[in-house]
Length: 312
Length: 62
Image (cartoon, rainbow over all chains, first blue to last red; front, side):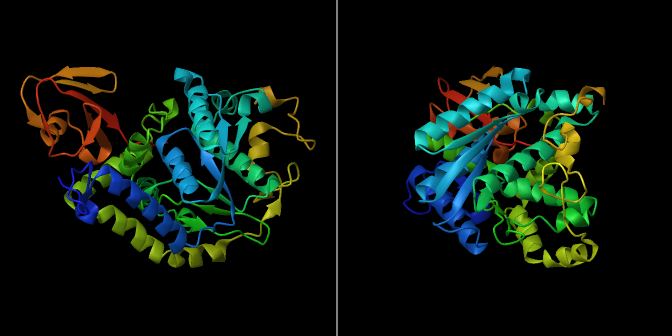
């Protein structure tokens, strides 16, 4: 295959765009894809204080690198979940730390075991919950907390087109209207002084993110989270990739045609929306008197762990 | 040629395209990156005896 721009040797075929690109022009193209997402969805500006949620994987590190190269003010946040299998969390943290040093940007690190006395898998076990559910609640809480306390304007995550399309497929299959109302690439701040949430890699695929990291020499954790084996999102991704290989561009059309019509689901959701409360324990916005994070971690009103925490 | 994928190593004696190799291993081209002798290559690239080939998964989930 030849690069569509310079006719040099291509390193990646992009059938959904009916082209292939060489290393140099692919690099340039990735920057443009992120800029397009930021501009089209009005995610943030060069003046914004941006917090990148970093996992040590290809997507979040590619995103952080691209934002830095585009001249954005982007710091990182790594949350160590304490997953010891295969040394997963500590190795991921090392990739995040090394990258932060490489780009000379601040990296906030939250250590769950240090803060709460037990890891996510241990807490999930005591609560008879799935680790992924405890992980989601905890990561959201700390992302919001750091963004609020450190006055960030926006939290950005490395969700890509494959992630968004797979989530959409799962939500459509079971008609999860509340989730369908929230699948946009950008959620603006709920009120003034709050922060938005953005997914600037929404025009890029997982493969493109991996190729970007490999070309730029960005080391990232290649092993999968041990708890992601058999995840339904992986099944949706494989199904969508099969469709995509036979109908290039189908994934993009599936997700972005939904985004264009998202107000249909948002209008429905608004009718059912409850006024947000404030968690009695941590003070964070909540749908209940005690938020899901404080319930999960058995926090008392001083923010300490309750004495009966291990008896659940 | 030597092909490394995950923790496995395969040896192929005949030349073939990346496309054919991926079919032999039941892999989708949209879900992997193929590296031949330290260079990322596209699906039409020919792989020949003596080449060092590495296949990297790109799908992650959870």
